[in-house]
Structures are given as structure tokens and as C-alpha cells.
Figure 1: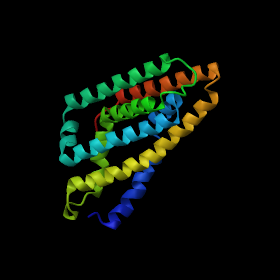
Figure 2: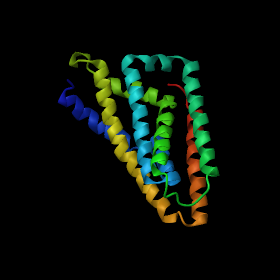
Figure 3: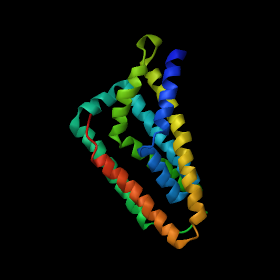
Length: 207
């Protein structure tokens, strides 16, 4: 069982990380501009699910192996770059205008996109290995269980923060969806966000 004192130290630190603008927040912002509020929330859930996979791998010790293997680390990184560029291209090429139908399908695609972006971002591996073990206490019980609890706390906070940002972007998209010029600019901004995230990931250096 995790001590209350440990949780009291971890929760504020996790919240500070959640509200700090980063790649996950920008990705959900882009999803909100691209598809609307509901897909943006689904994207934040996908990002959180991917984060939980990374945390579980860290608990099993797999993440440390990946971080220590330059070739494997870079393979994951370049897969992430390619996927983000694919999303950028899709955002730029998608026809403008409102999309009132097919929301469940859009949400499912957004969830998968969030999951893929998280899983192919090796920076998450480095973050988990650097941050979470500071709060792990082997004498408190299962190390994997503690990793999962801490990962769930980060993930839930991320869903609220990143999902909220995405909902805000989705509302803005709805306001301007009927304006052809504004819709084109939103596509360009969305594509630029995804391309910028790809460039950021491409320039990532292993710690």
C-alpha cells in the first residue's frame, strides 16, 4: 500500500506536470481543431492509455532496456515522427467544413491516434524512468502495482487537462466551421501543430 505521505508528494508534482504545456497538450489541441470536442477527449484518453502502457513496461523493467538500446529507441522515435507527419498531411488535405455525422468513428480514430502518438514517443519512456521511480518504495509492496497507481494518477490528470484544452479547441472549431477561410486556417494550424511535434520528436536526444 502506498503511504499517504508519498501520495501527498506525488499528486501535486503530477498535477504540475499535467498543466505544463507539452506535446500531449498540443496534440489534443490539434485534435480539437481538426475534429471537435468529442474526438479531442478521445485523443486524451488514448494518450493516457499509451502512458499506462509505458508505465507498465517500466514496472516490468522493459522501458529501461529500450532506453539503453540506441537502435530500438531511435526506431520507436522515427516511427513516431512518421506517424505525426502522416497526421499533419491528413489535417492539411482534409476537406473543410463541419462534420456533424460520424462522431463515434472520429472519436475512435482520435483515440487510436492518441494511443499511437504516446506509444511511439520514447520521451515518455525517459520521463517515466526519471520521474516515477523517485516515489517507488519497494517495502510498500508490489513495485509494478505502485507504478500502475502513479501512472493512473498522471493519466487521469492528463485526461482532464489535455481533454479540457481539446474541448476548448473543439468549441472554437465549431464557431468557425461554416467560415471557409477560417476552416482552411484551422487545417493549416492543425497540420502545423502535428508537423511541429514531429520535428520536436525528430530532434529528441536520449538522456
